[in-house]
Length: 338
Image (cartoon, rainbow, N blue to C red; front, side, top):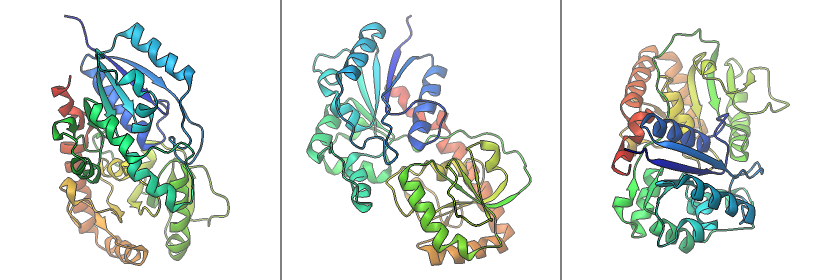
């Protein structure tokens, strides 16, 4: 019996993993290979630092690359990263007589991304209107990597619920190793504009008020002018284990908040302004919720003084991750597609 073949089309290279978008594709590729699916990969990187879909446009060269990959590999499945990439090459990927299934890797639908663009006064010169986005989703065979909010939105647009395969937020969960706690808090994020804006906001409104605590920023280029209690390091998983708590206060952006689930997978208690109850996560049991910066300062003081609360949250978020967000569990629902 011949193996199935999958072609992954992405807006970013698979490695090194520096963003949530890459995180999903990396673990998708790993999962497919582990399940005996032959994987082929093509990336069409957009080099702006705001968002990979900003000003993204049709290129004949990319069309030919995709066309050649389909001809040579004869894929059974094509995973397309973002609705905008799928829209640009819909004439090739969504042909009525196609011999492959199209699985859209949503990872922040354009409908939600454009709200972030508007908030930071950025104009996308190649916008994707709602009607066009919904049309390509309806013509796809399946869609994965969506949030609960996105799923609700898609259902309101009459997208067949059978097309939506909910895959949580895939991360890798390993046995926790004990490291010395060199830092109090870690802020995890790549150098995308939204992460820089959120960090700058946190620095001015929170970090400067906590000079006695050490903050580690992972995965982001150093920002000059920050105080001596802020340390910048390239992303390495071991660095995470040198931190007592995670800080995921998101002021700007439309991301899937992979950083939250990545920290939780290591048993790091996370303080965030994101409501996570839709995932089955409970406040003060799996994570700490802070509605604003002032509340965040209060919660930091509370959890820092309560070791039992920290231990409880650490244990619960790690166990939840093992059962729900570990990429092998998260992508298990793909078996009905494969």
